[in-house]
Length: 158
Image 1 (cartoon, rainbow, N blue to C red):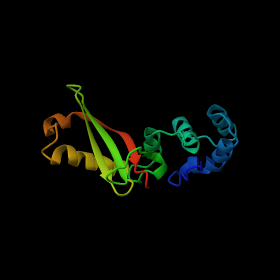
Image 2: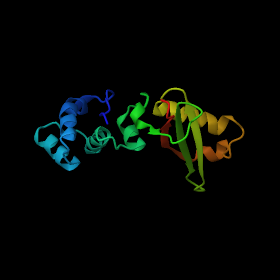
Image 3: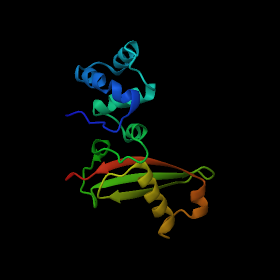
């Protein structure tokens, strides 16, 4: 499988990207890659180094892609798991809202024809949770929630 482009990466991570691509292609272990980066003065934030390596190895989770991708940049196609069933839209996101007081968890699905950014996903989830009147959670309960994106999926035809 081809390595993802990761064209949204900036700064020291972008400078280290050619080395990272080469090291991953050689099959080096993530810890060996990080140590080599450090000895060559190419290191950057440790968590981000491991996230980039996971992405280049095609094993990154949606959480890792969310950490790597700027909030207003759409998630790359490879950040979306290939759905085993046909979806109504090309891209689908599952957002969870957990109420800090009651512990109640609410999930909602956001669909789109194109990949969305973290900001767009959360805005669509806010709208769906609060705007439909059919949601199981009301404005008062939603106010005290911690929200997170659990899944990013794409239709098999994409």
